[in-house]
Length: 463
Image (cartoon, rainbow, N blue to C red; front, side, top):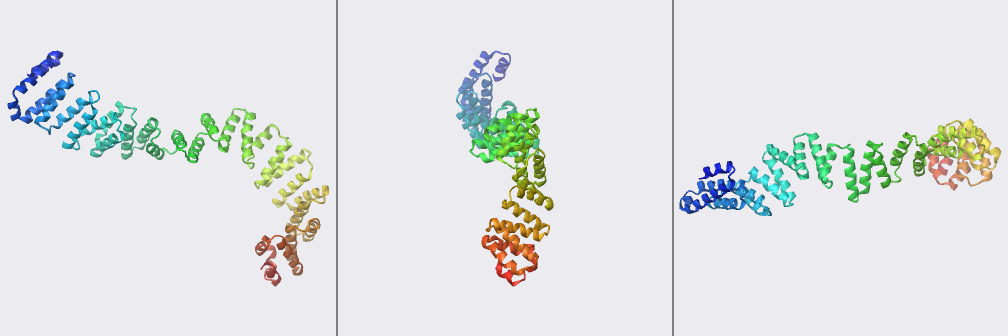
């Protein structure tokens, strides 16, 4: 009867086929004594009829067949699976399907079909973590089962959990390139997946899109410092990405690296006027950065205010040669004032050009003989040249005008030591130390006092 009914089903006589299957079921009920004597055989027959009815869309009759099959043989795994799949095809019956899959797995814990389809049902029910563990179990049973995951990924390309399984499998196999692509897909579909993001960072630590995704997530999580670090690394890798630059300017309007990238892009576009605004802001945030001054001087090379600022900035950074050249430029432009000559003298002193430094300080003193700093600087330059008499005269001019200038007394003491004038050394060094206690320690290491360091008077002073 079954074989004849199959022929009707294949030929398209659907209604007749359904009618005949029902007739088979009635026949089996009438012959229940025979059926009960051969439970395994008839369990399989009921299972077969159930599958045929399922294929005809008769789920209710199919379920009835699978139940009859399982009444005869509760260990018929195939019937449990077919019953479960029939429930899956019915509306709101997934919980019943799970019960059937569980019965199948109680009988066969490593049944691939049961594990795979149970995982799919769990996902439909929103129980993603449980489904995820089952997918991983498939691979633990046999890595070759990854083919099932591949098929699922193709069928559901927007499922991040499936992509994560793919990624982990590729990583385990040592295929970092494919693993990275799969993790990338996970992050695209689920930006909150920190585990996938971290793995992706390990595999592709310099990928700008990954850095940005991580930075945005850190920002959302209230970790601004870590987010900033990733944003700036992304910028470092792509310093001409105008969209990124403008995004970062909103987040970090006073970050020099971002401002510089914006300025440099504007400059490349020949918009130096606009670029200068950004260079100027960098300079305001960090006066030692003279990029703005240099760029502004390209537009207006005779701007004296800019030149003064540039010279001072270079001097403060210890770039004395550059500062000297800048001050000389101002002199060439006709500038002539005490501060300028003093600054030039200071540069020359730092460069070891003491004779020229003295000339500069003399010009200061010519304009204002009361300039104590100029007298002090002139005396220091003479001291370096070992012009001890001239140096002493300069320091005397200092203390004549400001008696409590400790550095002048200290230099005078150094000159006395160089000249081995022990009697003079005592009052001079004592006065310097009384005005500034730090000179006590400095004198112990100062080479000027090496020749007298064993003298009792010197030991007494610095003790």
